[in-house]
Every structure is written in structure tokens, then in C-alpha cells.
Image (cartoon, rainbow, N blue to C red; front, side, top):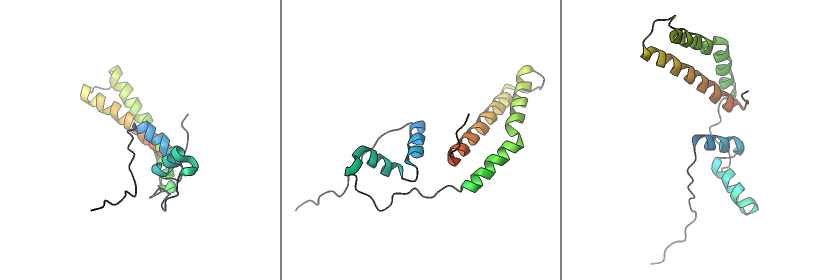
Length: 123
């Protein structure tokens, strides 16, 4: 019995979410794997049949969501409620205050994710 030679090998690397995001951004239209292969092997890399990411995000929809988020002033309202809760002007429990602060963080995360999707740099 002769064993068949391997047609490919897998190289596995653990990344933080930030490192993976940076790689995806640097890869552009390439998959992260294709980008890494080109970086590691340079001219030795053999082109694969599929070298583009799919599916592509609907940039118009993401832009619309980002615009609506900005126009809604939701983040400002949440921040105002959280400040009022911390100062005692708004009687709330510790759980409610924690939920308000968590909501502020969630809104900021959504904004950052949308801006990354659209390729917009945050200030």
C-alpha cells in the first residue's frame, strides 16, 4: 500500500481580534489566507483559484446605518442618562446604571465596526 502525497498543509496561527481585524484590513480584496500566503512566500506563492473575500458587505447599507446612528443622537442621550444616574439626578439602581453604561459601550462598538467596514478612520 502506497500512501498518496499530501496536496496541501495547514498552518494555524492564533490571533487576537485586533490582530485579525488588522490583517483583514491589510488584505484588502484578498482573503486573509491568500494575503498571509503572499506575505510569507512572496514570489513563491502559487495563485489559488479563489482569492477574493465573499460575501462583501453592503457598503451603502452600512453607510446608511452609520448615518442613522449619528443622526439619532442615541449615544449622546445614553451618555446624558448615565451622567444623571451617577450624579443622583436620576434615581436608578446600580443595575440600571450598569446597563446604561453598557449601552453606551455597545453604541460605540457599533460605530467603530461600521466605520471599519466602510474603511473610515476614527479620530
